[in-house]
Image 1 (cartoon, rainbow, N blue to C red):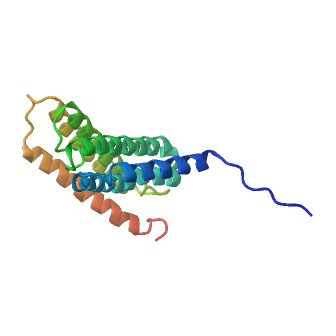
Image 2: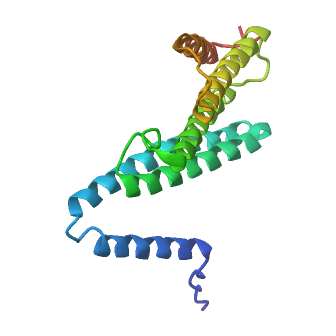
Image 3: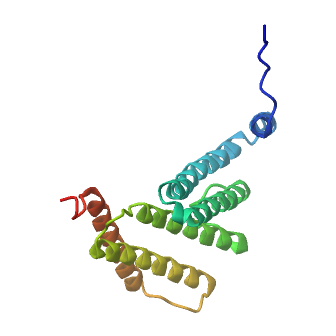
Length: 200
């Protein structure tokens, strides 16, 4: 009679065990002290940041699954989301929960804000790229390029203004680019729901 052997301890089990121990130690050390109100607020901000950046990173993972030719871009998106979460978590613990890096001062706040912008934009581009289908017409491709280009230009100008304080870009420029992106993205999502011309 053969006795089935138990599953061997692997890297996944180690990660789960380390996470459980770290979480338990954090609860025992930080969340049972006299500064429970402050720490609870900080932990709540970190949890919200994790929720947001998990969604953003998932767009990159989904793109790599749906469109293997864009797998590298999907991996970059997931990595940026992870870095943005790490920066936001550290700054939230040091300074209190703010708007995911945009309200923090100093070099750390600037780096977190730029990383957040890159995470948001690459995730949105992943969604746009994920709508690609074989047999699309030229109009649909043009709409997608317009949406991606306007978003990339919008984020690029925003990052440039963050890095170079002397550059002043009017709000009208941002409004025009944002309008073009929203309109093109909405049209693209509607086109994705319609059948292709050859199917009709």
